[in-house]
Image (cartoon, rainbow, N blue to C red; front, top):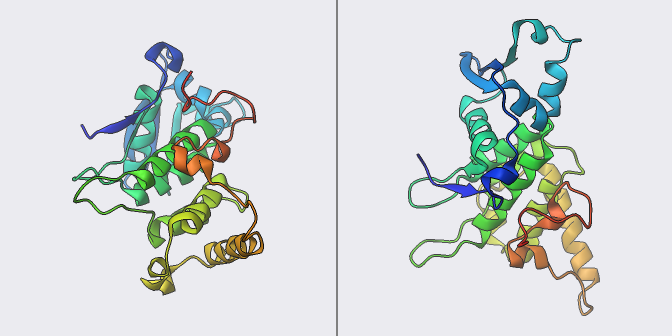
Length: 232
């Protein structure tokens, strides 16, 4: 099994809500099947909570179909449900940003903000990763497009992607495959850069969350609440 990013909470704190009732989830055009504990997935996902309520037909069959989603992405979601780990590492210890982006977009669809927060933690950790002989990597235009196509304009993931570019990016980031850059991202980036220019010479933004590796300001939880990514 691939390496993963462990949830900083212990197993007891994960609070797995599991009983013997199982549901079937068919994913993708080939209806690849997954068997998941109903209480567990309903306690995390607003989508599944609604889909398995008495008002929906899926409640009778205990079957939910996700034909437009990718099995490998839903598999990563199920792995996180049971383990608290985000599995997204390629050979050579490099993060698969496209997979992480699809995971975040899936979390948007499934209405699981906690899962989305953990995915953003993984993206931030990957962007900060430095290792001798390995080029530091950042989300590609493809990954950016996936996030922008799968999230609303107010998404914290969009803000994180823009901030990574403002804080660490250079002209070469926009020169490669510039025709594939998402237009909404281009507008957001230009807007943020103009804000930075306006504050030049003043205190401006510190990007403390990006530097510390605990991107709490990009999470969905309420301000002031202790983040699971912070040391207790």
